[in-house]
Length: 357
Figure 1 (cartoon, rainbow, N blue to C red):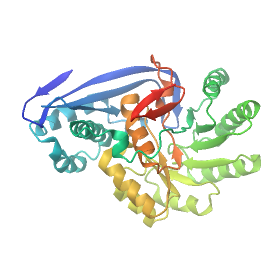
Figure 2 (figure 1 turned 90 degrees about the vertical axis):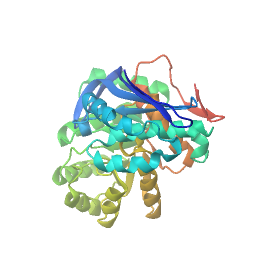
Figure 3 (figure 1 turned 180 degrees about the horizontal axis):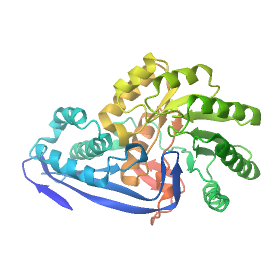
Figure 4 (figure 1 turned 45 degrees about the vertical axis):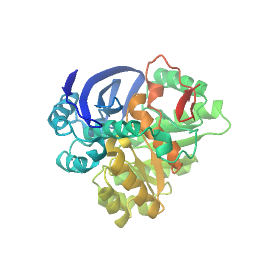
C-alpha cells in the first residue's frame, strides 16, 4: 500500500491505493483473450473531515498496456497534485488529467470515482439520490464467456440458470464456425430450461465485415432472435462499422469505440451505431454523463456495462443506472463471476443502500 498524507479542512488529506486479486468462478473468455482471475487497483480518497470515497481501476483485454504496474505509477504521479485541494474544486483539476493520460482511461476514471464519492460523502448526499433515485431494482443480463468446452459451458449455464437470469450476453469469438457451435449449444440449453429468454451477442472487436455478414445470415436462417450485437468490428474500423450498420438486421451497440463524448459525436455523424455501451470504468463520471446526454439527444439506445470489477467499481454503474432510470440494456454482472462471501441473487436499493438477496 502506498500512502500520501496532508491536511486542511474539507481538503483532500490522503490518497492510498492497493491491488486486489480475486479468482473467477469460470474462465472469462472473449475474442481478445481469457483470464481466470480479476486484477484491480482500489483507490481511497480521504478528506480532512473524515469523509472518504472508493474507486476501482480494473485491468482489461481491451487496454492491455494499462497494467497494475502502469496504474500504480500514474497514481503516484497524479496524487500529489490533489493533496490539500478542496474537494469542491477537484473537477477543475481533473479535466486536465483525462487529456494528459488519454491512453490510460480506466486509471483516470477509477480515480475520479473515488474523488466523486468523497465529495458526495462530505456533503451527505447518497450516490443513488444524486443521480435521481428513479428506481430501486435492476435486471441485468449475465455473460456467457466463449468456450467450446462442453463441460465448462454446462457447469456455468447450470449456475446462471439457477440464479434465475433471463437475459444472456454471449461472448462470441469472431470465428464464424466456432461461434455457430457456441450459440447453438447455449440456445439449446436455454430452450430446454426456459420458456422465455433474451440473447445478446458481444463481438469484442473480433469480426470483419465479411464474417459479420456471414454470421448475421446464419442467425437469420437459424431463426435466432438476437436483441443486439455489441462491438462486432475493431474499434477504429469506422468504414466497416458504417457499412454493417446499413444492412445489419440486428442493432449495433458500440463499446470499445466510445470512450469519450467526442468518440460518440463521430459515431453519430458517421452513422456507425444504434446505441452505445456506457461504462464508468472506461469513461469516469463526468465523461459518462456527457456521453449519456449526447446519446439521449440523438435518441440512441443506451446500455450500461462493466469490466470484470468487484462491487467497489460495479456499484458506480448500478447507482448511475438505477438513479437515472435511463438505460435500455443493463449489463452489470461482474460480481456473479467472483468468489466472495456474499451470494448475490438480486440487488435492490432501499434507503439508498444495497439490499442483497
